[in-house]
Image 1 (cartoon, rainbow, N blue to C red):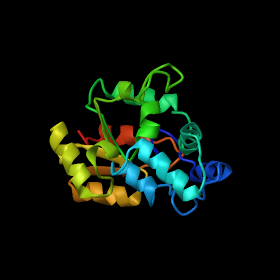
Image 2: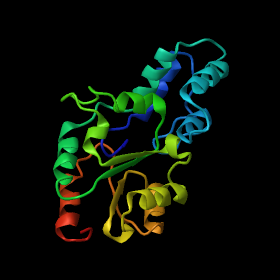
Image 3: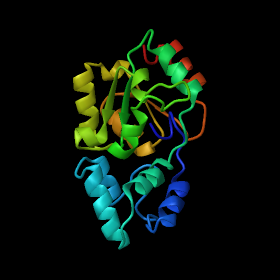
Image 4: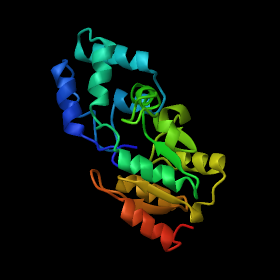
Length: 201
């Protein structure tokens, strides 16, 4: 999701966590978090435990609402033009979302009103595959294989889009066709070209 559908602002999130008393400089990464930030995305801890551990780490009580606000600041609001492109793509293709994510962000993203048009993220995809529910994160090959099997797709005829070179490498290792999208760019023309060229029929 981050870096493809929504722009990622790692430094902004680090700043906002610092503002509430949490030094997250070495915990938050644009692609692969560390410590309790990866634990929640792996599904090893839930949102309540994350908040408790973060308060323990900071050495003070922080309202969960403030923690959620700081965490959500890592991404911009979704870009409607990309979501509408995906909606059109679903008329001829099955489209899935495979994301390293956590319940704090996904509860917000999957609620009506996530987009300016009043839709939830889930309205644009056939199915969401979310790391904390699958108990593993990209680039672990396990999460790709779980998605491929559950979705019943042929990897050689499926295009995987991601903004992380590590995740792209793992997708390719699982037989998927791949496209590396750069954060804060419009990838629609490139993806349309790949589809038209039947690189990914």
